[in-house]
Amino acid sequence: MKAGSARDDTLLNGIGVSEGYGVGRAVLLEDICLDYSGVKYISAEKEKARLEKAIEAFAAKAEKEAKELRKSAGEKAAEIPEGHLTILNDPLVRLQLEAAIDGKAVAEAAVDYVCSELYNRLAKVDDEIISQRADDIKDIKESLIGILLGVKGADIASAPKGSILIAREFTPSVICRINSKNVRAIIAETGADTSHAAILARTMGIPAAFSVLNARQIINNGDKLIVDGFTGKVITEPGEAEIIEYEKKQNAFLKEQQGMKAFFNMPAANESGADIRVCGNIGNAAQAQSVIQNGGEGVGLFRTEFLFMNKKREPSEEEQLEAYSSVAKAMNGREVIIRTLDIGGDKTVDYLKTEKENNPLLGLRAIRYCLKNSPIYKKQLRAILRAAYFGNVKLLLPLITTPEEVRFSKRLINECAAELDGKGIAYRIPPLGIMIETPSAALISDLLATEADFFSIGTNDLTGYIMAADRGNSAVCPLSDVFQPAVLRAIETTVKNAKRAKIPVAVCGEAAADERLIPKLVEWGVDSLSVSPSLILRTKQAVFGCK
Ligand code: PEP
Ligand code: MG
Image (cartoon, rainbow, N blue to C red; front, side, top):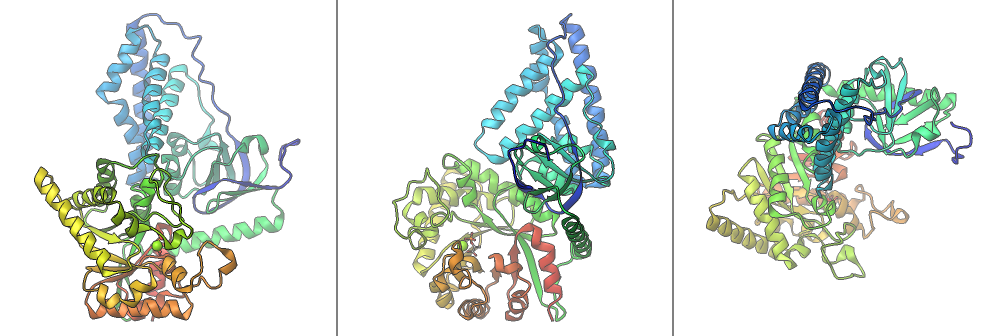
């Protein structure tokens, strides 16, 4: 650790964006200098020729990277450099570059200007995924200017065995050059979970911690480090015992990953032949890829409230349609269960003004909020109906406590269908499911089964409401336990009532991945489990292990 650093501990915290543990020595990557102020403009022809040559070199590099990635990390990873080529081959981008050169800009300045304009436009879009794509533009800009100036970045491909690379940020093209046999982990001072860089790190199996503030000020080249890609924790100056502990953890993690690969293409079935689908829970459209990459058989829960929470305003019907239909298309015929807006309680959205409540968990949450705010609800329902036209979409209602809430929702769905008919817009009315996550819903699950096409048991809220214990309050933690007999009884009753009514029943709360609970769920006859994408293979393995 650097002398004089304000830190007196040996722990840095970032966000874990790619699972696994890395133990190794720090290799600091300096920012490269892309100062082109000394480049002289000779003529438009000369600048255009320089630019053309640089684009050719860029294209050759991107094609090589795509080819290597296709072999080492699969099709999805290869699409990233290929996407860069598509952007650069866009006729409009080319015209803008030429126009800038005709206006007496040197090739470097033309690239800087056109890419920065595009970057600013994308970065401002109030959508996390699109604004993350702005990073790709920055990547293209820096690579092209680097090629034009003849500046070589750090020789990342030859980082020695046992390196932990630390940079201000990792662009996808830098990650593509990493030799994953030598590099144990990467640390970035900026960056987020949904960036292409993070997706690539995950695909290449490189543990990564992003947004570790001032990492390069605090850490020296050659320092011993431990990176925890699950939590984003970076341990500086680790002791021998800690190093051994984390090396063991990484070996166990790799062994587990290897063992679980066997379950990738298999539907989860146990020894007695019970067939249980294991699906993934997602909070944004990009995470559908994680479900596919982890062998998920569908999206069992799309928590749409995050689309609303990640914005400064309500997403429009078209924006919602784009998010929902992109998941439906990506899942290519596999089931996609879209849950309607579940705000209130611990999930607040500032711009959706709600009255201050003394007891928000028992207040105007989820379906209750939606039914009181039907314009917002109907906008979402229309987007879901339209998305259902593109795939195997199902609709799920959160926090149901009475049959009337379901009936009223059906009426609104029919109104939406009539409105879409009126406008000649294609749609499909999806099967309608109910979340069982309140004591009332579990107790009247026989009655609710007559209103629904399927059930999905939300064990998180069900546990909290049955035990009257807030899941976020550590003081009442032992009560907030799915193994409390009352909670188990509620789950069993719900499954039995679903079976009697011959409707499918899923479990989508965190307990769906609990290896201790899975045998009971299998025994009772649950049809599917929906878990975090990173837990899909582990969950399949647990189902296989059931007698
Ligand atoms: C649940 O309550 O179990 C559930 C899946 O919903 P959420 O965690 O989004 O409240
Ligand atoms: Mg819930």
